[in-house]
Image (cartoon, rainbow, N blue to C red):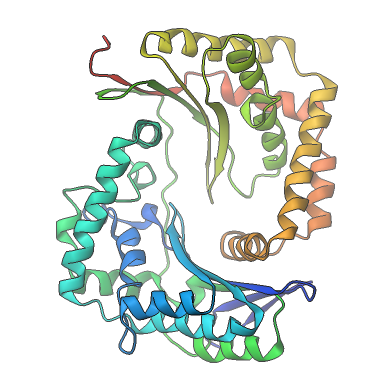
Length: 407
């Protein structure tokens, strides 16, 4: 059973007690992502995520790492376009310690200017690493094409131009704006105890900061084009289309459509492009849903000279889906796959913690598993087919090919 407790300061603690598990997963979710940054701040959310691991008033960065190594646990973090998450997974008898360390990082990070300069170099290397990975970079370029005038299209890591601007003062100012009680959710799942929840409330439930109302401008989708030459052995292609937001009542219908399109090994694109034609090893589609919009993207990697053919086959497959419709069996299979993925996630405390935390942060409520299963069951073939209108317009396109390839 999932319960939500709102502390006096407005921070929410979401907990799910699973007594037959030996692990506990803890996550602190902050509603601050790369879309909340100004152009000059691009990358600062991700940089803050790094800096919280660089030492507190009582722990060095090495001590934070060693404390989790000693107890056989894991601690990590990630930044998305709309939120940041700091999380850990430990054995149940170490759960209180994990919460204490994460709270120490959250409230007492020193932001040493010397460490800021050092970590700046680390993130610059991370940017270079992404640049070297063409199959990652092609997605990054796609977002720039789809939303050229909106912060959600900017890279989460920032750029070589913005990173040098981050100072201790600017970091603290950004955190004061977004790291506030009502902007934060603590999610805990596993073999938890009432004492653990008391510890979490004591540590997180008393801090106070003025709340700043965020106003998000709705992103306008652009069907543009990006082409890059790189030193790569393979060409990479991404196509992007408008999707649906997290709150859209048809979100599960689009998930069913995505599975049929390219979300599984039996999908249309996988079967046609890889199994029938041998045109690509990796080909898939995915749907990214956000608070006020969404994106449906398709990726394929193949030999440079086959990129035009790959693009043509993808577009032909989309047109065939639109003209011929879907088979009742593939809709049923796709729904069963979605339900299976949901239920298999119940076997992981990390998955439950993440799901509960994100739902509370982004939706302000918990979706019961039976409720989600019922919504998936209610998806009709007609509704799925109606959503194919999303992928029949002009797409945004991103292509990366080798330096020797002609454009």
